[in-house]
Amino acid sequence: MRGGDRGRSTMDAEGKGAAATTTVRRPRRTGARRVTMIDIAREAGCSQATVSFVLNRTAGIRISQQTRERVIEAARALGYAAASFADLQPAPPVVRTDGLIGFAVDQLATSPEAVVAIEGARQAAWGAGNIILVAQTMSDPVMEPRTIAALLAQGVSAFIYMTIFTREIVAPPVLKELDVPVILLNCYTADHAFPSVVPGEIAGGQSATRHLIEMGHRRIGTILGESWMEAAQDRLEGYRRALATADIPFDPSLVVEGDWSASAGYHGTRKLLQLRDRPTAIFCQNDRTAIGCFEALKEAGLSIPEDISVVGYDDEEISRHLHPRLTTSILPHRAMGQWAIERLSEPFDPRQKRHPITKLECPLVKRDSVGPPRPFVGS
Image (cartoon, rainbow, N blue to C red; front, side, top):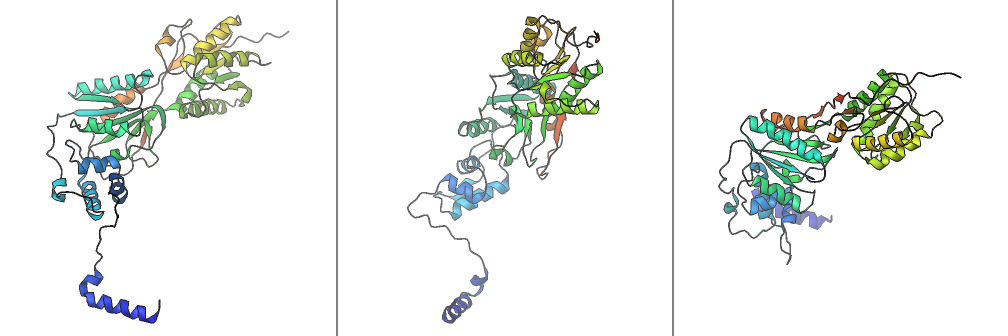
């Protein structure tokens, strides 16, 4: 900076007096472009949905006062055309029904897990006189925020967000800005911002494999699900841990890729049967895979469990009607739904920033498809 400039700057500051020491936030110049909710959301550090709730005074949405004030300040600073910023204070609340719980799930019609979890939540909720409102979002970036807003507008006092596949998610931003307790079911966030509940898949895979080991099996094949899914990764990890605990070497040739389907079970079993030292037991990582496994074994003239034992996973209804009846593990979605309701009954502290991930047991149901291996008969 040149000397003259420095002197002029000093003189200007002295001339302004006290104003020179006060930071004044001035409206940004946006030219001819209209200020949008996206602009305000970026400035306020919140979601566009939250900006919409505040600026439209959406009834029944319990946005924290701190977030609401941040949105109003950002709108004012950016020159948002509001008739009166005083009008942006909360709309009169809707009449609330005690114990009204919102429940959003990404997919409802494509698998039974969501229905089972909702039923578990309903049973627990009704026991305390609560009501559950359910909606499907399909994780659609446009419709999901609107769906959540529609549930919140009913005056819910708590919210459950569920995904079909167990996974880490980026939670819809509006969930972090609510002034009601939120539970994540079958999913979790990297920052542990919400109480979460998921199945204990590693322990489940370990328990299923350990049962086969306890029956005397040491050559245990496994047919996986889709390898990108956490459930498949964790069940495989449980399988490996059970082998390691029993001092059984891990043999990659006994691990077959699959996709959760009966066809994968059929083709995976045929591949395992082609091994020179074929397995005496097969851990199918879901029940549909086990159906295909049964067909391949019977086609090969092998008996279950006399020649080869089979274990499934999920405890779908079909597992009780196979011949022989399938030994399998229960996915605890009903218990997870019940856990979510019970967790909501605990005191809600909005200041708590991190919450644990709770893992529920996947109990093994022992039926008829597992037996000891045939004794080896030498030549």
